[in-house]
Image (cartoon, rainbow, N blue to C red; front, side, top):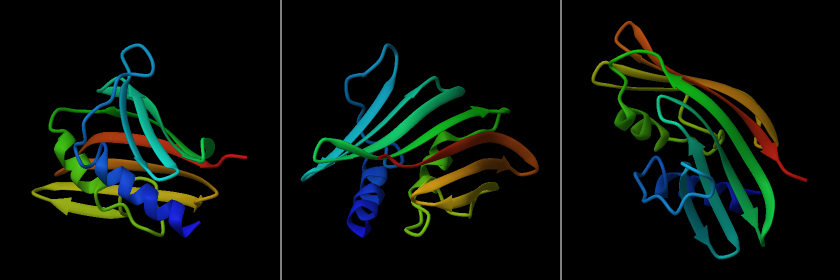
Length: 145
């Protein structure tokens, strides 16, 4: 499992969080980012921008092994997509889902709570700009059998 988690952490940093290039869309108007290394493949695909839904998935030898579904929204002016991506670059190895429990910079605060583990989890992330909550996202997922 450690090899899959290590790959997932690398893939997340090479795609959305790392401002990676989009690949051709898999669905009408979707945003897709992919990463592959050896027999492992990762795809993050989402619809929308201010209100959005998407899925991250991981395949080993062409078989799906793990997925994370998410839906979120920008709540107010003052949201920074660059700050979100920066927070997501700090995805922890022990909770390889979104970002760290807390991340702060220049008046922004990112918070993430997770219930469960790599096999089965759900969570919630939010961003505050000072005293204003400007973003929220719910996510869940786990192993595929």
